[in-house]
Length: 261
Image 1 (spheres, helix red, strand yellow):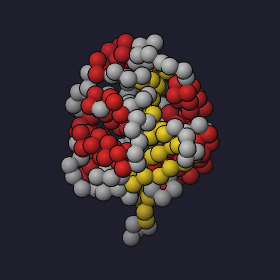
Image 2 (spheres, rainbow, N blue to C red):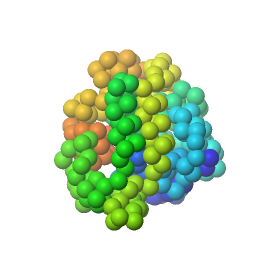
Image 3 (cartoon, rainbow, N blue to C red):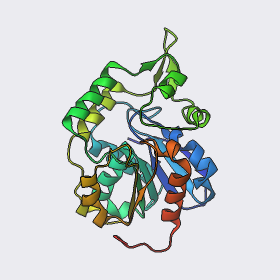
Image 4 (cartoon, helix red, strand yellow):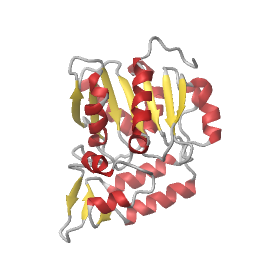
């Protein structure tokens, strides 16, 4: 499936492909692309399958999401772009690197969902199965548990176009809840093993949120080019915006970078 695509920045610049988290959309990268990354890159962002204006039909496996991404960059004639993946997008980066390392120049994985317990996967899947509707977009933002201290005005701007109004006046994300439930099921499966990371890869995470465990960091770190810790919680592009945006720029724009250096 070719995905709904948006671009910002320098059309003649090196391509940087951004992959959002579960329940997100391409607009999650709007501010950082216009404010920072678009100065250096042709920034490309998708709506993943089951999200926004891309198709919603199954299957919703991680393998299918990676196939969609490859089909879409093929259509854009992007041979070996740089990549940024956030949360679910970070997990998809690990899957993509394992299967298609030749399609990656460098990758920055931000707060990746490497693997979660079956209990947490069930809890989050049930939340999504039973929820997905809020009194307002502002209520959605106020109820987020993974953002920490954020610029609420900017966060709301990045959500523009991602909600629709229901008949009762409440709002829902433009997402397929069945797809999101399936994604959380997949998170309980093992990620590709660390040794499959064979391209320069940076992992950035927020220790305070504890999604990336010390054991996971220890396993993956020898195969990574860089590990960066940031303050705040899971939504690092809001709760640790400057440090996260700057670390990604520094990593992607650095001279030749060897694995594990």
